Amino acid sequence: MARETTRDAAAPRNYPKGERRRAQIIEAAFAAFGQVGYRNASMVQLAAACGVSRAGLLHHFPTKESLLEAVLDARDRQDGEHFLESGALSQDGVAYFAAMIRLVAHNQANPLIVSLFAVLSSEATAADHPARPYFVARYERTRREMQSAVDDLARRGLLRSHVDASRLAADLVAFLDGLQVQWLLSPDEIDMPEHLRAMLRCFISVELP
Image 1 (cartoon, rainbow, N blue to C red):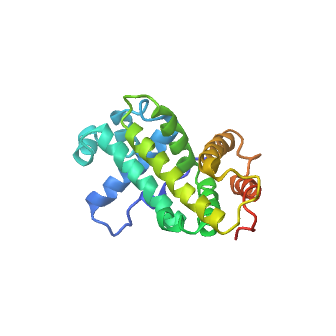
Image 2: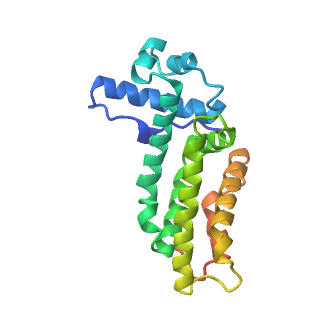
């Protein structure tokens, strides 16, 4: 898989030196966690990847857990920027799913974002994983917001007659997760935004922008 930088997580050059270094560390951890997982990435390896000593790394992030939290926060900021704050959009089902297609297209252009989520969400099923609370809350929020968008479509008569609106949100989340894994394994064969658009046509009776 091609290696991409997380430009959204990096600080501009005019930031103070400490802020630039912190952003570089987050970027290196973003790549490492997405490639080998949280458990297999050591602080020594992460320090070497961003060109600082272990002591320098610990100055910015005293624990590996605090670095993981910063990486997950960076990913959420990217989603917010490219998904236009899904919580507000979920009140309009058409706008919500149109924005979701745009987000998936953005992610397809940035493989490490997809890899990070796929690797860490799988690891986080372990009861003692530090990212487990984050992913439990993230999935609950995603299902809730998606269900709100689905309910809006149902009220407006924009769902196809065969659709069970009560199950659609969980089904679509499962579809998206599986689609990401398939794309990571076969990026030349899977076009994620087009597959998502085709899937949504099966449920929504209007064409999405």
